[in-house]
Length: 441
Image 1 (tube, rainbow, N blue to C red):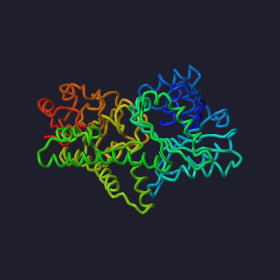
Image 2: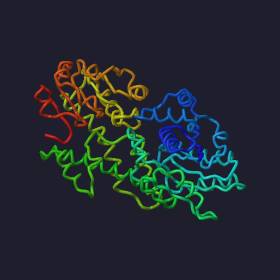
Image 3: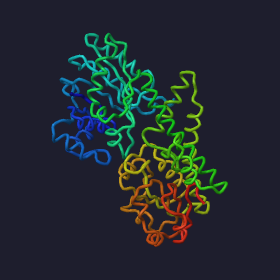
Image 4: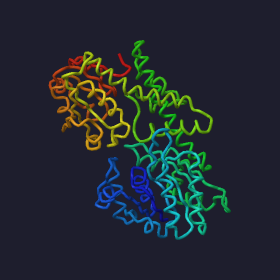
């Protein structure tokens, strides 16, 4: 089976490489010259564990290619996937579908045969119908099947998520003459390796598939926000949030994942998708009050974390140095999109702090997002050198292994604000730190 993937970003690259591993011939179309140059040179422009090896092996096998010519990529293609960006539209929270609709029109113009067109990007309800309209209006001489196949990839674990998914959601437009039979057949052929391991593949309509992606991310965002609020309550009443989370998570109806307290969720999905879902719901006349509250609470939390650090430093950061461990929104990625570090560091800088930071993967992306006078360090101890306060913002495993004595010896002060709860309070206090974490005594 041959497919074209429009967009070589995170979703397109991971999905394309995994489809190639399944045995499909995949042509990825990427229009960003720098990104395309990196890909064709064998360099992966994003950090995702195992992706470099997967891409290299499939390029060598001839199943995965990169280019900027959609017409060439679609030659003999059975299906075309749209995996372009859908950023938040300024002013109203809606997803910006400019790139999706432009891709649909270009696909239609380049089509040589009848095609299956699949949206892989996260798109609001109604997008699939509009894509179908654009395709048929642009090329009434062709027959296009349309499907929605949203991704559920966690950064840092994306390959495993694709290869061994909890589920695959596919919405199919069944309004055509064959009732979507051809589209379903192609999808089943493409996902045959997952059918062989009995991975759940949920076939539904376009609208349901589109909404499922938003609903899933919004629910997880609410779960994160809930445990953060419980952590705040624990601090007031003397509870331990880790024991609370464990007690909750052992209930099979709740589960243990996404119950780790922190400075607020970030990344490319949760912030964008919760905003988009609230906008969709408002337009539909069915407002999602829980999701709206989640968005507001999460934004306020990041600012609150900065104030917490300032308070621990004695109420002022003027003339003080703050060492920052971790910048990315989560470990095992270089993604800085909507990272909690951004508003927190902006506030600390505004408060007069000298900031020296270390992140094993995120510093290049951070340079254009953080204040100009931030010091970028070679390792964690360098970031802590002569610091009055050290703040943990991302739970990279390498930070867990830091020797408390060496960390204490590097610092000028003794304040630790561990916003990811990576260290033992007892051990850190025994080492002489004014150690404060989230939701723990």
